[in-house]
Each structure stands twice: as C-alpha cells, then as structure tokens.
Length: 240
Image (tube, rainbow, N blue to C red):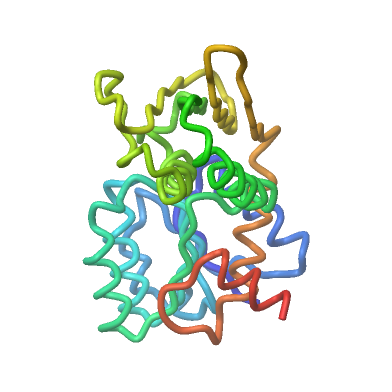
C-alpha cells in the first residue's frame, strides 16, 4: 500500500523502516519544512498517512490530510483538550481516523491488566494508588497519553478516586508523577500501597519498534473503516 508519513523524527524513521520491510511504499514524507506538500499529488496518492508530530501541530495536520481525502493514523498525544473539535472534523469530512495513546501490543495488554487490577482493588480501600511514568527528554507533554489512558482505566473502576492529578495535595485523585530522562522509550509503573505492603505492576518499552509496528498494523487495517477508530476496534475486528 502507499503510505505518507507526517513527521520524520526518530519515530517517523522507525515507522518508515518497518513499513518498507512489510512491502509498503512511502509516497510522501511531510515534516516542518515542507507543509505545502499536503496539497501535492504524491500525498493525495497515499492510501493512509501515519502522523507522529507534536501536540501543537497535530490537529492542523489532521485537517490538511482530511481535506486531501487521506485516512490518518495518529500517535501524537497531548492534544485531547481538542478532542470534540477533531471528532466533529472526522464526522464532517466523512474521514477515517485511527487514534490511540500507545500502539504497542504489550501496552494494550497492560491496559487490560490495569483495569482488571483496579476492579479488584476497589474492594480494598486500605490501598492508595499512584502512578509514575518515565519518557525521553524530547517528549513535551506530561502526563503522557499512555499514563492518562491508564489513569482513566483506574478511576473508572476505583470509586475512591475522582480523577487524576499531578498535584500531591489532591488526595482524592490518582497522583501521576513523571520523569524525562535520556532516550527512554517509555516506562509506566502503577503502585498500590497499604500500611503493610505494596502491589506494583510495570510496563517497560525497550525501543520504539513496538510502537512503530503497531502504527503500521493500524495503517494496514484502517482503509475501508470510517469514523474515529481505536486499537480496541482493530483488535476486536481481528479477533472476530
């Protein structure tokens, strides 16, 4: 299939390598210095675009891609304050849009484990819960999109937490702390602590390749599926 890349940093280059290894063709690469190429014939020839950029540019990238009638797979996080705007854009353009905070298959298994543990811990109020996430120094948003997805999974199941926070004084909410260190691809640690013990689950990514492969798999699946799609949609479809 023909793939356009929007964003050609370390993640974009890894996606390019994996897409080529799976027999796909990269027909257009758009980065900060060639935004006008959204209107090019090369971009319009793409079956799908894979977008990994920044929170400040992501929504405009979606708008330009939809105007060219190109489906979009996006892994950019930090823009969800504009989610309703993007949902309306997807509907108005009759577009195909695939978004997840993390494309790693392992992380999506971790999401399920996290929800299951939170349901159990809802019956044990002596345990407080907190999360710590670690990413590379180039990641601008915090908490990460993955951390927010994990937090939402916990608070949906845990009656004693009304939401998440980065403020340790808001004790009724799940505290998320973060580090930005070196080139760490991503680590998320969830800890339930009581007076007598602690229960901890952790996911550690070793490289960007797991995220990149997941994004290419989503790009292979998305054409022909309309509307706002997620990793759950793809996994449920493939398991049917």
